[in-house]
Structures are given as C-alpha cells and as structure tokens.
Amino acid sequence: MLKASSLQISVIISLILAILLGSLILMFYYFRTQQQKFDRWENLNTDVETATTLSLSNYFANTSGDTVIYLPLRSNDSVKINKKFWGMLEVASITAVENLDTLKRSFLIGEKPLDSTILYIADEDRPIYISGKTKIQGNAFLPKSGIRPAFVDGQYYDGIKKLVDGKILESSHKMPQVNHEILRSIESNFKGIHDNNRPLLNGTPVLKNSFFNETQFFRIKSPLVLNRDSINGNIVLVCDSAITITGQTVWEDAIVFAPVIKIESNFRGKGQFFATDSLVIGKDAVLDYPSVTGLIAKDSVNSMAKISIGENTKISGLVFLYREELNEQMDLIELGKNSNIQGNIISFGQLKYSDPLEINGSLYCYRVITERPSSLYENYLINLTLERKKLNPYFIRPYFFSGDHNLEKGIVSWLN
Image (tube, rainbow, N blue to C red; front, top):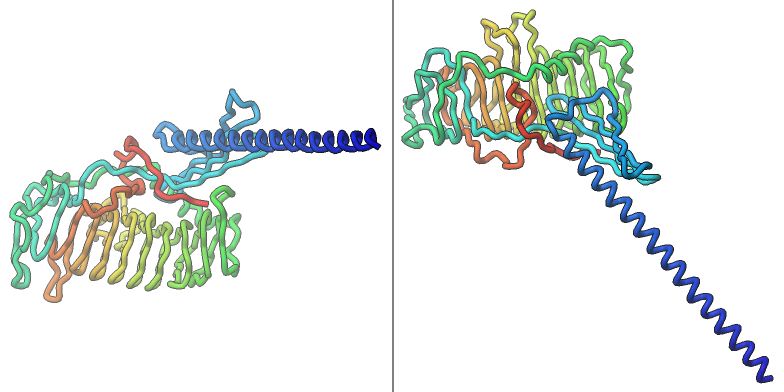
C-alpha cells in the first residue's frame, strides 16, 4: 500500500514538473518570438525612417517606377521608394519588407521657405502708394521709385513711420525665374487631355485610391457638374472643357485638370486644381492646407486669363497664375472682400482685390489694383495686411520658383 502511494506521488510530481518545464519552454518560445517580432519592427521602422530621409534629399530624383534598395546585412529585407511629382508637390511612397512583415509610409513633399519675402512687385518705373490700415511685415521687393503714403477717399496711411516692417529691396522689371521642370509636368497633363485610352468617369458616388496603388486617371468629355459624395487620394480627373465642383463634394488630395474650373460657394476640401482659361472659387469656401489653385495660360491665346476668388474665402497653400510671354492685356487674379491667403499668391500679371485683404505668406505680381466704391486704384495698397510672421512656422510650401531646387525639403502632409 505504501509503495503504491509513493508511486502515485512520484507520478504526480513528475507531471507537475513536466507541466512547469513545458510552461517555461512555451514562455521562452513566446518571448523569443515576440522579441524577434519587436526586432523586425524596429528594423522596419529604421528602414522607413532612412528611406524617408533619402526621399527628402535633393539628390534623390523622381522615379518612373519603384526604386528597390536591398539591404546587404539582412538578405530577406528590401525597401521600395516611389517618388514623383504630384501637382506642384512631390509624393513619396515607401514600403519596407522583412520576411513576411511589411511597413508602409506615404507623404507629400514640398520645400522649407528660408527667405522672409512678403511682397514682390515688378518694377514698371512707377512708385507704390500705401494708404489706410495697410500693414507690411517682412522683406519687400519694390520698384526703384519706392513706396509713398497717400490719401485715398479722405483716408491717409495709418501705420508705422518706415512703411515696411522689414527690408526694402529693389525689384526687377521681371518676375523671378520659375521652376520649368514642374510646370512642364503640369502642362503635360493638358497636352494629353484628349487621350482616349483613359477611362471615362462613371457615376460612382465615392472615388478613393491609396497612394500605394497606381494613379487612377479619369477623363470627362463634356462639361460636368461634379456632385460626388467623396473624391479622395491618388486620383486625377482630366476634363476636355469645363468642370463645376459642388460645395457638397468632400475632396481630399485629388487633382483636376480642365480649361475651365468652377468651385462652388461653401466648398471645403484640400486638393490641387489646374486650369488654362478660367478658375473661379465661390464665396465662403475653404481650401485647406496643402491646396493649390493654378492657371497656366497658353501663349497662343490672346484673351485675358483669370482666377476669381470670392468673398470670405480662405486658401492655405499656393495660388498662382502663369503665362510665359507677358500679354498686353495682363492676366488677372481677383480676390473678393475679406479673402484670406495662408501661403503664396503669385500673378504673372495683375492682382486685383477689394479691401480688406489678408495674406500671411508672400505676394508676387506685376501690378496691384485695389477696387474701391469710388474708383480703381493701380499700385495702391489700401487696407492690405501682409504679415510673414503669422504664417505657420511649420509651413512647407509647394514648388514654383527655380531657386527652389537647393532649398531643404520637408513633409507637407501624411497620406494613406
């Protein structure tokens, strides 16, 4: 009886020891597996961060496909980088792979502004006049004739004695040189506007495409009022004639190319919109950062190209109007009362506004026209607020001028 009891106890103890040893082995295997997983993710994060730094380098050029980098110390690892122009910005998509684990990252790239230029008006051999509650904070490039205070509608200049809170420098008779590479990239989309190989836009209420996929191009043959629930991501719409985007459409990161673009009042979204003849933005619209509204006029067309921005509309990013050969009938950007620009506004022609107007960033143009109830005032700055310090210090701007090549690049926004 005693021997049988001892045998039972031995069996029970052996079973307990086996369970404990098995648990220890299982725990060791689990922690080892988790540690290997953490190590892999740490490696992937390091690879993605390194690839991000490489993408932001001025020496890493845009690619027509994926650039695959194999890591010599880890034979099963690789990093893919795809970098290309996305409108007036660049987009980079990174995929890091280690064994069966994958980590992805996609983002828009722009340039970090280093200068403090707030105003550039080309020299047409006549002075600039300043009146009302105009405030200029930043460096101003002005005609050689200078800047002078003036009476307008019984109101004199009401501001600081030196007129400009910053350096006053002489402007040239021409605007600064543009970045022809990126403008040619934009123009190439207009040259292929009648490409029959592109699929026609269907009636799908939601269009969405990740930046890790190939870009989806859709062609619109006839004038269209675009009333979609949402257009999001890696999508390009190319219209043969005119397109109207309703205020109800949720727009994020997609691009439009059309001769004529109209964005209705109360629209809110962020994206890039490029026209050749006319671009109209209604009242009370908000184009969030980073948005680009641009018009590239054709030299073969003599009629005036125009961008019109409605009252109380706010745009964060870039507004530009460009024509290579200056037209006798200068092209025009027109801004309604209480417009607000956070970023850069560039007109290779005239800029016309109804006061008050606020620009936190920079203004470049050949000529300024202020519209008052009594008259139009040419090269008068009336109730105009230009403040560089109010621009977000983390603002990364789209490319435009040729000197941008050597500036440090930065991440504009994260994508999916």
